[in-house]
Image (cartoon, rainbow, N blue to C red; front, side, top):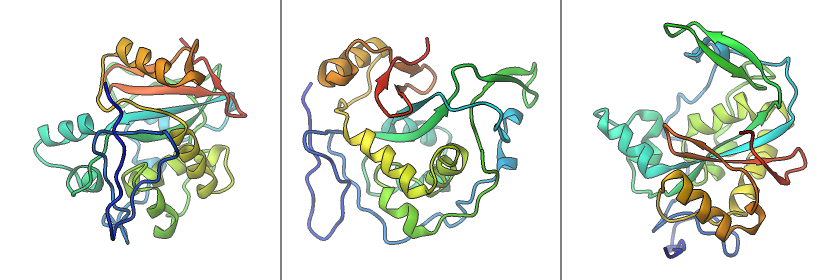
Length: 238
């Protein structure tokens, strides 16, 4: 499988990739000049899972970087009949994405547990740090637009900062810049793959991942990479 690089076009600002970092086949993204989904505020009360309102009584022991294969997500949106307004930048405009950042999540080695009563029967949920500073103000467009080609969606950026980033970072910029640093340090394939093939590919092309246990979410196909609190690659929990 070959790497493919992003080729910048004139009169557009594209996702910045560090030397040698490749993130998608034919990936192109023009950073928008303003938000298109203006109702991008996120509130703990919006969470469907009743366990996800807030969790502040567990420590951050490590971080998990979650990467999503965008074409698969957008296909699932279209199968439902229409792309949601929240996903329009990612799925309904002229941009083309491959792997994107879903989020950088604070994790506890011994999370608390909770019964999500929004489903029947109630479902056990691990409680990692979440909404540590409660319901935060909506970020200004200037704070999220520079990261739209890494994490494509105003509500996605607002939500990841509010749910996860604010637990360990002083500002949204610090959080997004750390996500970008970790993302750009990776080489990623130009397609989705079954779990074992994906793990093999990642370890072959990213020496820092060799010998490490990676994570995988079977329903979404998301790839998870875990880091110590000083952002060295570590094993994800099995």
